Length: 283
Length: 283
Image (cartoon, rainbow over all chains, first blue to last red; front, side, top):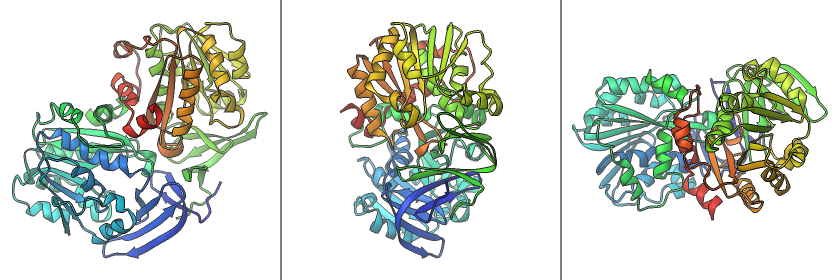
């Protein structure tokens, strides 16, 4: 069948396309950096689209935001200072601030309009924006990390768009080197790393570059994400210390807040790479 | 954007649509039961479509076929007699026959044309069709199970289309009662149970009906499946004995054959239900 104008479609170079049925387009604007659209969908709540790519929907964002934050936070023995690069919808920030040990979480998003539109159309993701520990800087994350003092952060979360346009520089060895320097001794970098099925080569090259700049080990976690290409997504963690995560599960099992997707055994499952992916990433 | 005629699209009632870019339609026919089409895609190899719904692609079928077979086979202490209902593309049969302890695997597919077209367009799924342990019957699986002698099978795998059309009767209490009777004391029924995100109510009602007819316990396993709605899919196992699977992982770790998606720790991860799904299924 062919889809009529009541659908928003993202088609991509990998020969797959995903569509959501829409009621109406609520907003569109061209910012200094990108084209942003907000749709009201029939079954997935609100949908934010940037440069034609689905970014966040009300219905399924919980999986992505929980998996971008909690595995890394529990893998660090005592994460206090958190830096989020991108993450303009504030969903990752909200999850980070569920951890009572966090002293400060700074969100460095290049495009302030993403956050302003999220406040309007995804208020449920912005409920912690007024938390005293939340800090916002709207500007270039690559430069921010480059200029950060050595050892400032316990955790850097790169919650960006795909590696094209303004996010391209976030997938480079130079950026990882700056992250390594900005992180403390037990610091962890975690970055969204696209689809395990479609972007295996990208994940491999990210892990390679992370290792080259000095990280001791990498873990890639897989999880479903309906609105992203192939419906299957990943986050890759790079750790400075070999040992910081050795008892992550003890910390995760003592979790004192509610989640919808994350749990200690879901985290363990996400770390279990299927053989085809192990072969591709670890050879 | 809108998609041109170079894409095949499956849109469904849940307000999501999935498309694959195609090179050409290689075949179409209307059988006694359904409309079958075969496409050559640009990035996913061959694609079989039944009544407008994607069934199997060359690229990602390994996940589904491995997860429909190995978890259940390793959960039974000694599975010898296997019945597959549906499964006409023969991919599940191929995985089942990797287990050397299996004495016979009977595939009961209602539409012989599905198997004949799979032999032609998906020969890699049909490499075990001439195995001496493989048996084929083309006819009604519901009736086959109803008429089966008590305790005939160790495992019944229901590898069917969605619960509409010819497959509707495979999602009913009456069918589960007949499966219960046709299974041996440690028998297991495993059935594809749609999307954990989109079809939570269906999974819950399946588990309820399986329990009503006498199964001791149910486990739902989740896994990615790019070409199915939401990109996230599930299989639900119903076990007659409470104890048959207590050491599945010991058996799985001794696995003597190669897989691409399945592994013992992937199996354990698939059993780890996220909190939202636990709350929906187990309350």
